[in-house]
Image (cartoon, rainbow, N blue to C red; front, side):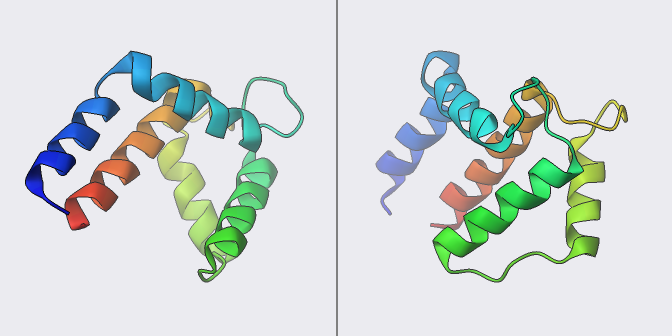
Length: 99
């Protein structure tokens, strides 16, 4: 990937008008019961679906527990949209920089 495309992609991640709707769509897909937060079960189900869709290894329970603890910044037992959005953005930046 050329550096100009990387710059454009990274810029779009830092533009709330571009990034927030994408993150919200992903969050809504993970929030199966539509209560405005993602619990451990919903996160696990979402990650299993993503792994299956990408043809990558499915995460195990320990990996999911570690991921959930990292995402649940306020330690209230659920992941809200802002916590989820930070996670998506962080991972997208890693992916883009590795290209």
